[in-house]
Image (cartoon, rainbow, N blue to C red; front, top):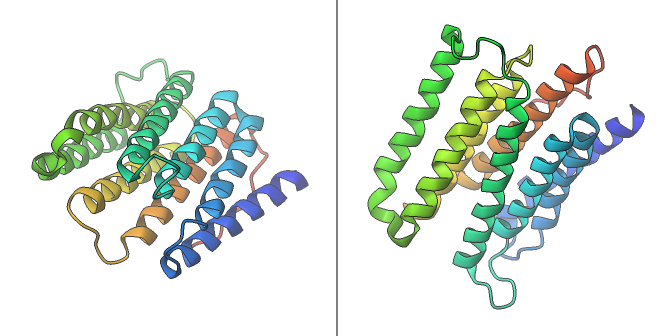
Length: 227
């Protein structure tokens, strides 16, 4: 438990460091803290469920690819596609994870879950509607990714975890990805990088905590500080 607390503290510190340093430098070196923060959550996730740790590890790879402007002959567009592919695979792993906890009457959810599912469909549908003329050759990859992302979010909401944390995390994940799409294809907006990171890191943390509570009963990960 002490080790888990230490790993979480380092992850949170790395996340905050990335949040503070990214706007202050034109270089790519802050991505180190970005990747480290999620990788350490992956280490914690492996102790909860192998699929959870795998999804978080794939996310850290995606974070690296999306956080770099150029790697050798790979330019920003190529890295964006590779990052998109890494997160798509991560979402597929998340879907497999949440299916393990699908309730016996998942097809008959309560009103809160219905609202969550509708929110996902409305948000992603609206974002695609706004962006479709700006996507160009990225239209098909973005649509495919959006469909998989929607399935991940719906799977999280329908999972019977005994806590809504993972469902809230999935909604934040979708909000973060929606802001990434808007800032990339329609132009950045005030505070977009900070909002994207806060919602994304919070999303991964809530998913981790939700699965941890489901699998560990009374054991708890350290409480995160409010931002």
